Amino acid sequence: MPQRRSHVAPSAAQTELASALAGLRESVDAPLDFPDEVIAEAEASTAPVPQIDLRDVPFATLDPEGSRDLDQAFHLERAGTGYTVRYAIADVPGFVAPGGAVDAEARRRGQTLYAADGSIPLHPRVLSEDRASLLADVDRPALVWTFALDSSGVVSDFRLERALIRSRAQLDYATTQLAIDRGEDGPAALLPEIGALRMEQERLRGGASLNLPDEEVVRAEDGTYAIERRRPLPVEEWNAQLSLMTGMAAASLMLDAGVGILRTMPEPDTAAFETFRHQTEALGRPWTAGAYGDYLRGLDRADPMTLPVLEAASSLFRGAGYLVFDGEAPGAAVQAAIAAPYAHATAPLRRLVDRWALAICLAEANGEPAPEWARASLGELPALMQESGQRASRLNAATINSVEAALLTPLVGTTIEATVIELRGERAAVQIADPAVTATAPLRPGAKPGDIVRLRIVRADIAKGEVEFAI
Image (cartoon, rainbow, N blue to C red; front, side):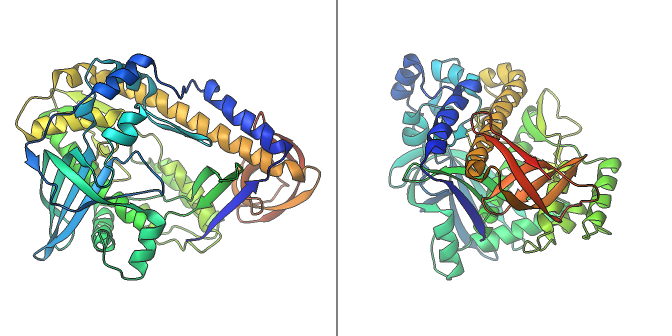
């Protein structure tokens, strides 16, 4: 898939950038180190020994290359005219004692943060990257979802159980995509087939996916930093469907139990739809009929106007939050983009709320009441997740801003070309091709999305992450 990477070469700017990135941790209250008592408890913790042994099932994980915090492992096989999908989730509820030091520190952190110079984990690495992680060729306790799918990809039945597993392969996206493209057999050979069926089920439900290009700061082996922008590989989208299917199953279990926490998002209102419709007309790619999800799925990813359309569509994917309930299932429980009730339940190593969802789901699957510790603290989760989400957004935005300023520092005083992505009053979001930078700049009257404009770089401040342009 096409991607763009621009490097900050070793220089005074690189030194200044390294200093700025290190300072960002303090600005968002994101300590890398854990208190001694948290480390000690993590090192001593043990999960319950599962009574079910699934080590004969050849599970595999699929993550970015080099990942160590492996939350999920899958196994796919045909079953008559349909399929059996097993999806194992790291047994974090088994390792983390409610009310203990690890629990308290995880509540303070909320989620794993990803900085340019490394991750800031939710849990001590002895858990998140070792003892609780579903690493290959080691026995691990896991919470295993088993789904029966018919020939259309519809879930006809599912169950959840605590089991002992042993992953056989740690796959990465790029290598797995190449293997699939070559028609090679392997753990992910059925993933395109099952993923496509689940995507069709999403379409039939009325769901929608935005799939904006990823933007990530990466550090090269020589110590230089880069911004990499790329579209998700097909294998990532197919893999995401397994997680979405599991999140919907988790939501159904918690709704049955009458207690839990859902991830919700409201349906865009009429005004939002009309605004988006007018934007697509102005961009020359009018949305004239059908559901907005179908329109977005039909966009040509090679069309240079698709990015401005997707940026405009992001306004339709707002308002996501968490909904807590206990005693009665909520009336409005749908995540609009998924078009079904949904819960975060597949990334407990990296996201706090998943531990609660999994603990409640496991209890319901076993015919037991929800754990009292989970019920008592459910109400705290939305605020904790909102705070950690804001922290992650600030860190990500500030990191990208500083790296972009470093990329443009050698070009101060020169003129560059940029593509207008989105109008913002008298200013606009623009995409610079080389170096790959997205910025906000002033525009001449009459400029519109898709136009190529020329801008002079007036100033670049790495420490503040600011770049100033002139027409």
